[in-house]
Image (cartoon, rainbow, N blue to C red; front, side, top):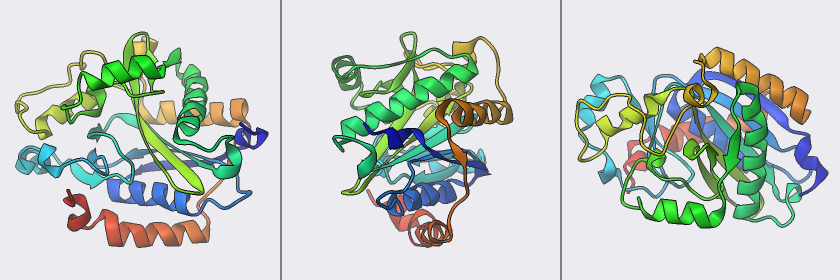
Length: 271
């Protein structure tokens, strides 16, 4: 891992619709140029949004009528993994170029991103741990059929104690890697059971066995604005990150992706 990994470019966004958020994350991946700084983006979702993994079957969804009545949006991510309800959370995206990692592999990107997240979570009073590959594999295999991301712990994901805290997914190209995921502030993510096949309509916000939230792990509630401010400050002071905004090229690519892909029902229901 090279020293360049420490000089992050920091993007801090308000809560945005799911289609816009996915378009921006993918634009950052495609616009990562050789010699460019690695990127850390912190953001949220408004309205709440269910995201499907890129290769996840849309048949995992239940009756859409309930989701629409609840004012919950739907988007398909550019990354893999399973469904997540993005609501009361801070979402992160990390983009690393080939020259930021040695070797440049999916696992190297997961390890680098996990190490960064553990450092940031300290700002919220959370002592996170990175799950090793052998433990993660046995945990994930036990729940392979479940469409809910938070019901299994993946390789190099973050736990607090023995419970999954951060749900992450990744896509890697020849030149760059995008990893993004959900840092739940409360157990609102558990409401996803209302929108998945075979789930009861009366499902509430009871914590999923094996999963937790920042509030539970830190022993205090956090608002979105509060958590975003603390994480952003930690990124600046602990990681030496430099506040930034999207370039003209990134804005252009994001607009194109949002229109052509992430607001398109054909993409969302493609599997």
